[in-house]
Length: 601
Ligand SMILES: Nc1nc2c(ncn2[C@@H]2O[C@H](COP(=O)(O)OP(=O)(O)OP(=O)(O)O)[C@@H](O)[C@H]2O)c(=O)[nH]1
Ligand SMILES: [Mg+2]
Image (tube, rainbow, N blue to C red; front, top):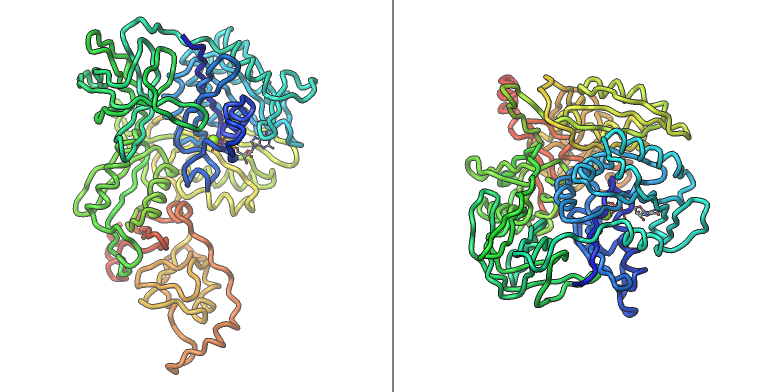
């Protein structure tokens, strides 16, 4: 039997998980000397690279001496917390990274709680100790306090600590030690992480924790072998969460080494492999021995907390920029998303309308962003939180929110959040004129807050939140304070008219952009909506003088990317998303329809 260790790398967003895995891969000699390794190699899909975040957890196998270490890199963003929870069930130990300056953050708490509950013994890695503002001792204290607060056992409290600068491939066991490489980290892993339990001689049991899709072999399940053996060509029984048993055959068995996947013939208890050939495979399913099926406990799949309506684009400019525009195409795409993304759901509501639910705005924005890159064109509405009844009480999701901001801004932000029904829980100075304030807030109160927060803190504030629990509904929260500047004409926006409009508020539209009646071209500086004409030329004459247009000094428009636009819109507004543009519009394009709707509201 080969010597194996299975670990997950968990942390708050950006604390350096993927960078640490790079270092483990490089320093283990898993790569051949000819292989070129990119930075954050595990963040392999386009959006991950572009945004510098991990979206999907991914596993790699690393050779160290005569051991194989299976490492699962997890996403740190709160929207993907459910995935981390599942991954933790697949491993026997975890590396918890904590940024040596930022310290314990909302998602650190979330992952520590899950890890402790599963009885795992962690290795704490204090990362980024190279930062000038790093304060490793304070952060170790914070981690210790967190473990105590979360009822860690004596054993768990006795955690090993490794100090690291993952980016530089540096690690050491004491701050007073000279800088070393990752050898001490590897040794700590081999020493402190228990060997996998399970026996190759027992009946086969694999549990699937992630799904993948391949055009040639179809759906792929990535699974941990808890007992027994599995080989290519094996007949198996798939035990589903609802107790149903489905017959299947392993058409392909895939092993991991470094960044490569290769076909293998056989694997046994303790290892992590990918299997193809079972079309109905889902996350949490157990692959069992048909002679002696013993299903493992199904996994907890997190419930969605947010919904967004996707719809066929029906704006006057519809169909001009996208390849896939019909309800059928959108439905097919949503179907294929749900095939591999267990945290999302959708239902069809009426002609060309789909309610998509997920764990947070980022998850939904990523789907929308992927779709526009694939050539889709569609509309999306304002995100709404899911309200549900628990024991007869109307409940809504609450979030734990932490803001780090210049101390001078704390008063303003506390007051603003108060109006959004946030309750302040703690306030601590962070040094260098910064303060950290913690809140509990209904998720509804957070929608649209980020833009305001960045304005109030002049871009210096950082906010982080993660799901807490469902709690009784809190009543109305304050929403956007400013109205919209709405085009009253179809045509092309002209610099001359935009110039005359720019002291009415903040414009989103640049000259020479196509506009239509009902499209929103900016944010009004007052609370009411205002219909404006952005296409009016200079004089009464028919001749447009482009020379005069060029001389006009325009404030650059505010760049409304998908996230910002989605946070900004209100109930009676929509985003029109195409591969080329993100336009904001009123649901009712005609001003008189809008009045009627407004009166009803
Ligand atoms: N100064 C410093 N920066 C680091 C160190 N390790 C990582 N970083 C930087 O921190 C940023 C985030 O690193 P990632 O490895 O993507 O963090 P992550 O935890 O995987 O992030 P998510 O997957 O999005 O949760 C990158 O810009 C890294 O270069 C370090 O030791 N020191
Ligand atoms: Mg990452």
